[in-house]
Amino acid sequence: MISILLVEDDVSFSVMLERFLKKKNYQVQIAHSLEKAYGMLKSAKFDLIFTDLRLPDGNGLELLEKVREDIPSLPIIMMTGYAEVPSAVKAMKLGAFDYISKPFNQEEVLNVINNAVNSGGQSFAHPKVKNKPDEEIVEKSSFVEGVSAASKKLNEFVSLVAPTDMSVLITGESGTGKEVVAKSIHNYSHRKNEPFIAVDCGAIPKEIAASEFFGHVKGSFTGAVTDKSGHFEAANGGTLFLDEVGNLSYENQVQLLRALQERKIKPIGSNKEIEVDIRLITATNEDLQEAVDRGDFREDLYHRLNEFSISVPRLSDRTEDLPIFADFFLERSNEQLNKKIIGFTDETIEMFQDYRWPGNLREFSNVIKRAVLLTQNDFITPEVLPSVFTQIEPKEVRFSTKEHEKELIIRALKEASNNKTQAAKLLKITRKTLYNKLKEYDIH
Ligand SMILES: Nc1ncnc2c1ncn2[C@@H]1O[C@H](COP(=O)(O)OP(=O)(O)OP(=O)(O)O)[C@@H](O)[C@H]1O
Image 1: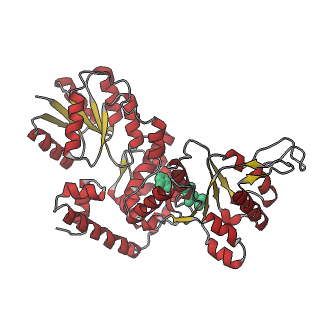
Image 2: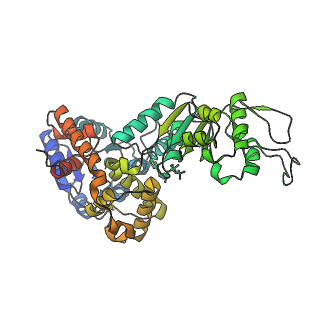
Image 3: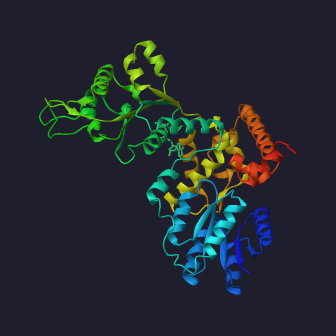
C-alpha cells in the first residue's frame, strides 16, 4: 500500500484530504507542523509527501530542501494557495516533483499521485515545468487576476484588446495598477518579445519632451553633445506606454499626434525620417474628456489614443480580491526583505476589508511591506499597521459589495447543487474561505 505523509496545518482540510485518500486505498499520516514531519520521517517510511507551503513553524520549502538531501528519491508535491506561484516555481527548482494549487479537485490529486509514484525514482534535482520558461511563469504570476466582478471585467477587456494593435487609453485612480495593466496587455500581445517602454509624461519638462520622444542629433541645441535616440525608437516593434498623458503640453500633443498618424519620427536637428512601428498605450488619472472640453487636450489626439478604453477599478470596488492581493504582496515583501512571515491574523484581514484604501494597490503594497518589516513573529497583526487603521470609517461603503458577494455565493451553490467543494471552485476561493463566508452571511 502506498504511504503518504501529509504536512498541513489546516486541520479540517487535512482531515478531508486524508479521508479521501484513505478511501482510495492510500495509507496517510498527517503532520501539522514541520517539526512533527521531521519526526515522522525519521520513524516511518513514506512513498510520497504532500506539503503545504506555509506552516506554523516554517515553510514547506525548508522541508523540501531537507528531504532532497536526506531522502533524494522521495517525491514531494507542494500544495499552494492563491498567488503563490513564484514560490511554487522556486519549489520546482529546488526539486519538488510537482505543485498543485488549492482548491484542487479529486481527479487532480489522483493524477499527481499517479505521476509521482510511477516516476520510478527519477531524479528530482531539476524542475519539471520545462514547457514554459521560468521567466514567463514568474512574469505571468506578477499580475494578480483577482476574482471580483470588477477584476473579471478588467481581465476580459485586457484579453480582448491585447492581441490587436489598437491604441488603449487606461483610466483609473492613482495606484490602481494602470501600468501593470499596460504591461499585461503587452505581455499578451504578439509584441511580447519586443520592448515595452514606459514613459512618465508628468516627469518630462515640456522643453525637452520632443527630444525625449524622438531623439536628437549632436549639436542640435545647447547640451546636445551626442546623438541620442528617443523613446519611439527604443519602443520600435513593441509597445510605448505613456503614463500621465494628460500632462503633455499642447505643442507636445501636436508632435505626438503627427508621429502617430505618419508612423514616422524625425529626431531634432535631423533631416532623416525614421519609420516606427509601435503600439501605443496611454494612461491617465484625470478625466481626459473634461480636459478636451476645457480645450486643454486636443480632441483629435484624444480619439487617436482612445481606440479602446479600459477603466481600472478602485481597490474599494474589488474587496473580494483583498486576501489574494494581501498574499501576493506578502510574498513579494518576504522576498524583498528576506523574511518568512507566514500570513495575517483574521483581525488584520478584517481591518484591510474595512479600510477605504484611497491610495489603492500602491498603498496596500506599502502597508504590507512596512508590516512585514516590523513583524517579528509568524503572522502580521493590527499593531504593525499605520495609525489610520485605528480610525477606520464604518462599513456602509462595503454594503453593496457584500450583498453582491452573498448573491454570488448563493448562485454558485445552486449551480453546484449545494456541493461546497464545487461551489468554492466556481468562486475561485478555498473551501475554508467558503465556509467562513457561509457563516458570515448566515447561509444554510
Ligand atoms: N494586478 C496586479 N497584480 C499585482 N500587482 C499589482 C496589480 N495591479 C497593481 N499592482 C501593484 O500595485 C502597485 C501600483 O501599480 P501601478 O504602478 O501599475 O499603478 P498606477 O495606476 O499606474 O499608478 P499611478 O497612477 O500612480 O501611475 C504596484 O506595486 C504594482 O505592482
